Image (cartoon, rainbow over all chains, first blue to last red; front, side, top):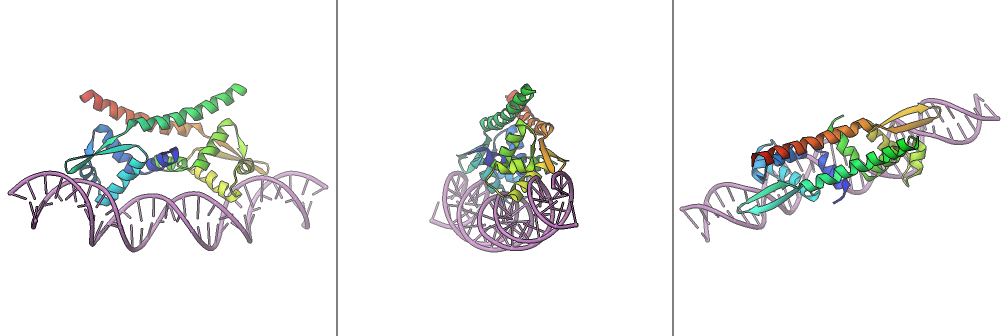
Length: 95
Length: 95
DNA sequence: CCATTATTTAGATAGATATCTAATTAACTC
DNA sequence: GAGTTAATTAGATATCTATCTAAATAATGG
């Protein structure tokens, strides 16, 4: 999606913690849910938000659903950051 | 504030556009508001969200309120990004 | 095919957010 | 100090979000 969806997805502590865990390696949905004191449906919802934002991918493997981090989307944030820095730098040039 | 407030503040197109404009140089609140088709109070609200997130600062100058970008907070995002990349890199190490 | 395990979907609710209009505060000008 | 300009605050509302419980779907194992 866009930066909107992306930043919104990142604006939640639980979701960032999910990402941090997925950064260490792929995990099944239930394994993720077990790591939090929230209900499974709630975690499922958060995983869906992350998926909509393109931050994670899921793959059905047997009866499990394995989630993995999609690192390419982090480039969008980096791109946005550099965009901002670029504008700031131009301004400094004009002084 | 924290990353939560920060990312939430960035999850709005209007607010990111405000930041983009402030990156070019300081602006008065009304000057910012005039650039959008939203009401002044709405822009005032967005400016407050950005201020709470530490992304902008304001300074009363005469009858105007001048807003400016606070670039230091962008380091928090960079920090978070590097944090994530660090974890990912460790994982690659383990293979 | 029935029971179990894994996960999602549905439906409900409380709290947050974006927006507006109207009213208020603050500063400058005459 | 009365009028004008700049900006915020107050109050209202409609939409979005996070969370829960209960129900539904899907795959596995006997």
